[in-house]
Image 1 (cartoon, one colour):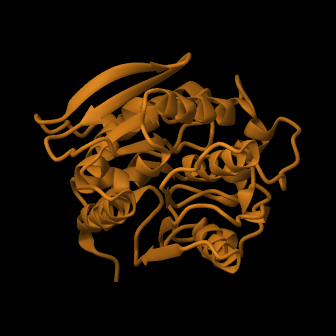
Image 2 (spheres, one colour; image 1 turned 90 degrees about the vertical axis):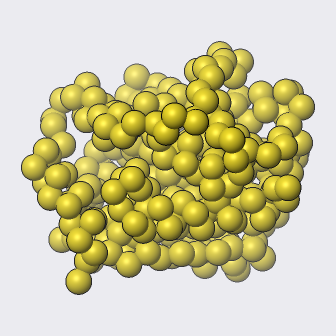
Amino acid sequence: MAPDDIDVIRARLAAHPRPADLAERRARIDGLGAGYALPPDVVVEPADADGVTAEWTRTPAAEGDAVILFLHGGGYVSGSLTSHRHMVAQAGRAARARTFALDYRLAPEHPFPAALEDALAGYRFLLASGIAPARIALAGESAGGGLALATALSLRAAGVPLPGCLWLSSPWVDLALMGASMDAKAAVDPLLSRAYLSELAGLYLNGADARGPLVSPLGADLAGLPPMLIQVGSAETLLDDSVRLAAVAGAADVAVQLEIWPHMIHAWHLFYPEVADGRHSLASAGAFVARRLGAR
């Protein structure tokens, strides 16, 4: 039986279904995050990462120069700094690090590879700012998780020093939608369906190959990538993206840690103020990042 707190979130989502209009969809996901007030000790500073809108967050727990570079979810068509700010700040608190979130360009106005170009610009901005790559955690949720992995692959191909670790929350790494959980979990996932993900993929790809390694990094050669933490809920149509990714990464000799959180729905971290496992999973991610970045 699912915990009561996540059932409350399920009921709330069911009472406010996703609208058809894109602008209303974007407002809806922003509203999910904006409904949670930031703790008073969180400092937010706007930034410009060589033309990409971004922002820093910091709590008193931040130590040294460790940074989480975060890429939000939203299927490449929605999501923003607003939608994920509270969760990103809490992740930074748990990791004892500053966070640097990117407001990368969205489809359909800016299809692939615009988001990837922005993510790469954000990472290079951190390096140019004097942040050592070993002190950077490259992180993302859902589409942002796939984008984080594609960013790491692009950095490796360009010979740019890789980040200290990857933290991927329910990463969408197969835009061809081949995972068995896409159908097996359809009845319990309140947010993502095959039809909706197919629509999002079409808007982002804009004719690009859905199996290309920079849009579906599940099919890429992952050898040489930094240690990664993959977190996913058991009640997600994207469950198999994470399970298969862990297997592919492990087979490529990447140090990988897979956490499957029972009963959790997609993007459950967003609801951490109300969901105990949201808090626990962020604490686990923070511990992983702190350990890998050598937080002092």
